[in-house]
Length: 262
Image 1 (cartoon, rainbow, N blue to C red):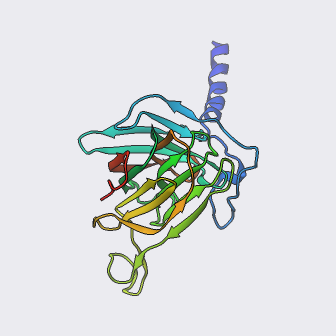
Image 2: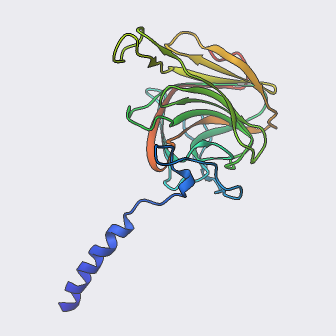
């Protein structure tokens, strides 16, 4: 009995240690008044973690960059919605970390989705993404459109494997026409209902619907060549390297042609 009583306190000391959250590199934590998020070291990579399990219209799902906390996904055929849960430091710089639902395609592509965030208090820079990428490597060449948690919309691209992402960003707001704000003069950000990306040869065009009106092109297309077959799909990144969050993407359009985003 003496040995048993000695073992129980030892287990009590060990268990909290086992339950501790994983520790990410310092550069991976998000921007704050006391911390600056920077690019990863040039030689920092993690291989993708892939489940070859069909989900909705997609053939597989991958934790690109293998965030320290594994992601998950589900599909509800009744609402035609994908629930994507992921951690991940960012989809930016020279490598990405996000949960990605994908299929392989070649040629022209139309890809679009309605986007919402179940938790309104998530990190401002979290992002739901529509992505066309050359491979599942964390530093792959890619074209991305994203809706951030704070309302920012962007079209971004990595010109070649290992290069830094570039983008064009759009912020839309209103004084007086949207609810919220401390006064009629407060600028209230608008949250888009839907975003899309169309691949027409080597040109990629961002599409947006702010309030449910027909989707329309925003800005000029970007130009990047991606060899077929390539990966086409939807994803999410919490922008927090060890913390899960969730995005809902519904009414997803994935077609092997242009002109299918409405």
